[in-house]
Length: 236
Ligand SMILES: [Zn+2]
Image (cartoon, rainbow, N blue to C red; front, top):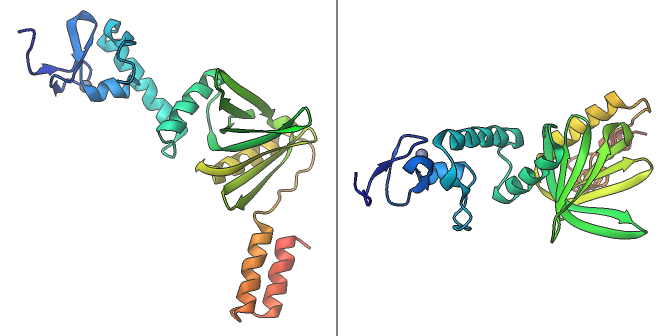
């Protein structure tokens, strides 16, 4: 086998690969797709620990990454996957059940702080995670401290409020993630781990009322039907 063989076999998937392959330990190669599946990028060509890794080690990383992709679901894009991966490191062995990505607003020292980040529901908490210019920022809301979870929808996306220990934390502009499952799951956990009675707050009441009002105005439903709907929505 010459040094510049045009073709070589990928030591991980076994497929034939061209010159765009990557050198690994024991003078073996991996193909570009296995390279990427293992989480390596071409962006930092000088930082390539893959050259010291064996085919078996790379295979193991790919399998782990596959499990992680399943854990976070198909809603994650490249950016949210990378963020979820960093968040997972702070969660140690807690499994990511559901997640959403949006703009997080919380009060600290009397001021509103705003961050783009994740709400992650695990089996015991809602975990906020955001990357900072250097490092990261987290906040934990154990289900046992959460008294209610409100959901709504605004112009910029979905909105979730967490009421925990008397404080309200809000995430709005949620356009990525698994909003419905997240809320449903979190509410089921609050119900289980909290002894205080919990009344779920209905979704978009005002918005729905407006919709029914316009149906009434357009003559699609009558006054009686509108009032019935209104009473139902407002739980009167
Ligand atoms: Zn391969």
